[in-house]
Image: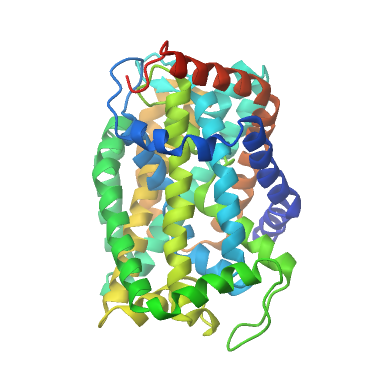
Length: 449
């Protein structure tokens, strides 16, 4: 079974899917006339504005922080270092390109999620790809496919994998038992997710800025301590983006194809643009127009890939540790340790891995819950939440390679119906985005409330 899913995951995450994900972002960027560049400042101002009109369960800021809780994680710590090890420093350039076009994808997902959302029988907002596939595209079977894949992926990548990674990190740094970590994680998770999206968003709104700020400060200090090598580190990224990288030190070398492949793959893994997860929480935002929340949603990709991933990348390239032969979290720890005194590098990276993991558990519970609700209706949501808490505990105890492989496969399968929806609804998206911008310019739509 493990070999079967491993082979299937490898097939699904082949070049064809990366091209489809990146190509969709390019197409939407063209259709929307580079909205991610022209409206970025307005998007950030919207993020911190208070929406007084419209339906919704949480604020713009709460929605963004919940989405970031899911995306800011091991992709920013281990994913970036793996991209550099396998593709050379030039992979970072392609990660940036992926983030840039991914912002248009994330905008589109957010717009459609709000446009086609609805209020369930408990008075809560429900939305996401399954709803715009059914009500926008008229293909309920595609919506059901997405919901099945999303619900299964959530228990893997958003639950058991996160709790297992957290347990291992604490075991290495503090020597705690996996059983104890599992109990504590399950209790903390239960205290939050039983309260639904409002409590998840409240926790994320306080938790995410703090954890990102700590990582930001640590990475910035590392870069400043290697400031004399920063220029050469940046030059490496651009030089190797179009040539590949020759073997040097512990680095075995990479072709141009590898550079592009791993930069794109790790960028998409980090920001999840096109995967269809983030629009589920975007639909819950309190807003009076889909365009406003769509702009807020796209700032998540900017912060995740173009800011946080870039900090990790510059720490790696400026410190020179990328040729040491290490990989993953160990390489990031080595880079931070080179610029921070004592054990602070290890402490910051390890604690970030733990906090990022816990925040992902909270956000992915909501993603999986809404997929489950689409399939089985609202009355079973309580059962789903208790099952989620149980699997958090189990994930801390058992490291199951098959869970990784099933999750990888389900993530890829989530993307396919979502991308079909985005491409086929791009005409509607383009027309209504233009109307939104004209309404803002004419004053018929208020910019902030």
